[in-house]
Length: 150
Image 1 (cartoon, rainbow, N blue to C red):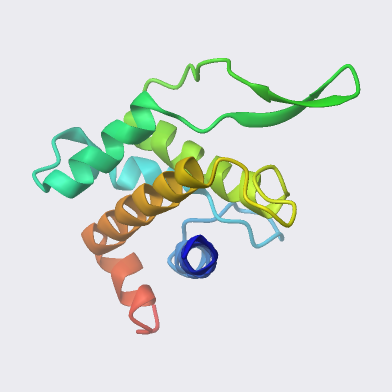
Image 2: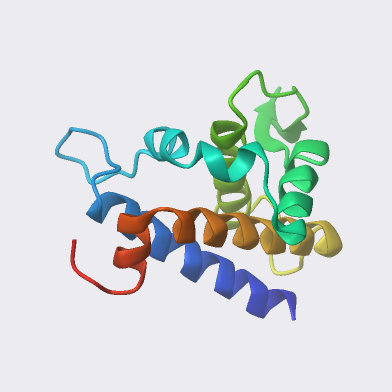
């Protein structure tokens, strides 16, 4: 079950990054890199007062139980529990969703077996709810997501 969710999350995240880059939410460099902070500013309304209870719960989950960042302390892998200073909720949540992706992709949560599978599942499920709500709320990103050329 969690393996399928992980695949869905990675697939959705990759598709989302493409959509951001295709719709101009990218850095003005030769590297094709999505500019999540720019996008966060375009979808702040999604986070300000969500009416959908599922979306509201997903946002609250990330604010109350943010994923930690894997770091190396004195040559040993550890989890940084320093609270994020970001004041803009949209930017903060999208940073945390990228952290979920990084923790999964770079092996912080999985090395053949899942570490804290219930927590990983909750983070991925809530991240998907938020990503989909943001995508649906932005006309150009929604079009790109639907396969309509921008």
